[in-house]
Length: 465
Image (tube, rainbow, N blue to C red):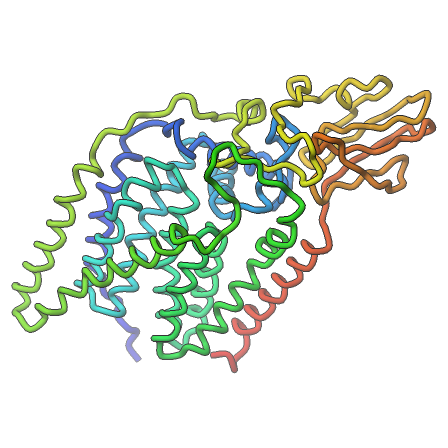
C-alpha cells in the first residue's frame, strides 16, 4: 500500500507571509512601551523565571511583588502568558523584554493561522485566507491589544480561540486519537490564557460544537479540557473572597463578568471574519483565474486599509523593568486598574509600609530576630526573646502560609496592614514560615488529575478510537 502523499498547503504559507506587516512593530522596534501593560507582563515573566530557577514549577504566589511582601496575583491571573515567557527566559537566557515580544508575535501568528484552518474547513481555502486577514488585521488584534494596551493575555486568548475551534472541527471529522488529543490540549491552553473572555469564547465554541458532526464527542473533549485546568480556576473562584480589590482608578476588575465589553468583541470579531470571507463563495462558479483574482483583490484591499496602522513607527520603552530587582522595588505587581490586598486588611495600601530595601534583615526591625535564610516561598528565622512578642513577618497574609515554631505548627493572624503575624513565646529559638497549599487547591489538583486520567484513557484505549 502506497503511503498517502502530503501536499504543501500554499495558502497556509501565504497567510504566514501576510502576517509580517502585523509583526512589523515588534520585529523592528527594540523594547516595549512603558505606558501600557507591557511592564506588568515583564515583571510577571521575571518572577516566573525566578520561581522556575528555584525549583517551583507552579506557584500561586508572586513572592517578590509588592516590594517583597508577596502578591497572590498568580492565583487569579490565568498562568499561560507569564508561564510561556518565564520558561523562555529560563531556557534561552534572553531578556524579559525580548521574551514578551516573542510571545506577542506568536499570539498574532496563532490568530491568523488558527482562523485560516477553521475557515478553510467550513468555507474553503480561499475563504480561509481572507478570514485570516480580516481577523488578524482587525483593530483590536492589530493595534489595540498589542500596542495601545499591551494586553498580552487578551491577545493570546484571541489567538488561541480560532485554534481551538479548528482543533474541535478536526477532531469531529477524524477518528485518530492524536486529533482528539490536540483538541483537548488547545482548548485547555485557551482556558489558561485569559479568563476575562471565557464567556464570549465558550459561546462561540458551543456554536462550533452544535454545528459539528459529532457534538457529543466534542463536548466530552471540552469537559476534559476544563478538568485539566481545574488546578487554576477552582481555587481562583473559591478564594476570591479572601482578597480585596483596591482600585487605583474607577475602572478595572479581576474576575470575569457579563459586561458586553468582555463578550461582544469575541463574537463580533469571529463572526465578522467568517462573514466577510464568505463573500468569496459567490465567485466559485467562475473560472480558476477569476477566483484567484477575486482573492487577490480582497486580500489587497484588507492590506491596503491596514498597512498604515501596521507599519507606523512605535516608540520603544526604556523605562520598563528588565531585572527582578527593578520589579521588586517597584509597584509592578499591580493590575492596570488596581491591586490586591488581604481581605482582613483595614488599612489597605502596600505603599504605606516601608520595610528596608526590601525587608530582609529582620522582621521589620524587631530586636532578637535574625533572618537565617529567605527563599522565594519560605523564610527561616532564629529568635532570642526575653518575653513573648507578636512577630510581624515581612509577608502578606495570603491563603497558604503556615508558621512553625520550634517544629510545632502555630496559627497566624493579620495586622491592620494585612501582614502575617504570630505570637512567639519567650522560649522559642526557631521560626519558619512556608507557603503551601489549601484544601480547595488540593481539590483543584485532584480534578486536574481526573481530567488527565480521562485524557490518558482515551489516548491508550482501543475502544476510544
